[in-house]
Image (cartoon, rainbow, N blue to C red; front, side):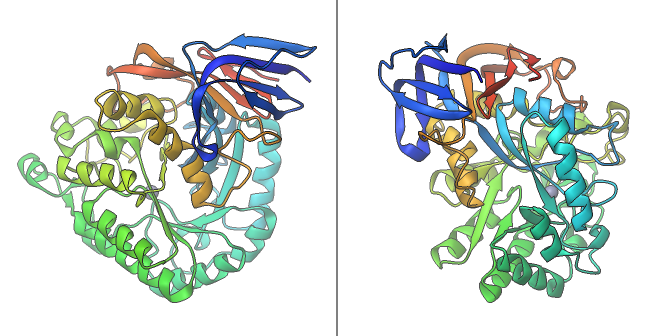
Length: 433
Ligand SMILES: [Zn+2]
């Protein structure tokens, strides 16, 4: 097995409190040494990482790979190639495939396919309810035993509180989180964007922030009642941030994530009627963004998650009201946040890396991920923090070519990704081992 000595990189490993120019040695698929001026050992391939940032591999706890069933949008190979290009070495894929991942046998089948097709580590979310229909609980215990790492009906709110309560109770027996797509179904109805001045002006139906706040409130109360762990997906409203902050202070087991698009884009962008901006929950306003950034800074929000949700270009290329929600997010996530928040000095690089590595690992108690400890997994990325590039979805490895950041100028990009001691991505290309 190849051995690597990565020299003179700026190592940022928040879990271990490291932030300095250091060397790192990789051997037998593990981190063999971290330190200053490490000497090369026999068989080492030496890489000069001067000017580059070395970080633990990113962890995305929210994505959609579309396999099984919708491989025209994405499959395990293109999805994980895209993840590798974005610097993600572990991703958690959602259950809204066809068939829905709601039985142990489907989890087992996915795990088998992942072994042959995936370029990065893929963890599986099982559905909370059968077929994501919100009517009957799925086989939570059996799926946990088959290796599911979380449960969610993401895309839908579990409208029936009794079912959500039961899901939290079952999942807690396996110490696993239930991930909530928190939007009150009746309040959002057929809204297509944030309800406010812009939706009124455009004459489009709105989804009020209160729909999210109300949904999050119930989840917090059920987590308190059951002692289960609820994780709030893609937090987008100020009210939700406030509720989660209060719940955490009370010791309730709630964690939360925020996406790059909810941090960097506002509802006003929809004036172009470009369906690339259509997501659920919707893009909101600056006031909400300020609260989200505050939530990241004070620890209310644990992780950045992409909600990578690719669609075929033809599907998104239609009238705003008709277009499906979501877009491919792996390959822009780091660069968007680095460009919009770090380069503008609203946030710092160390904190951004923490929310993409140690933060998500701690939220889901994945102790072996998100750090570069000696003896630990050799999952890492090299980042060129000065690299300037322009977002062009056609140059991306995902099949999802609709992207709200198209044409935007970026500073900073992942240039190499290593999983399990092997390089899987370098400078725009996948390396198959
Ligand atoms: Zn969702």
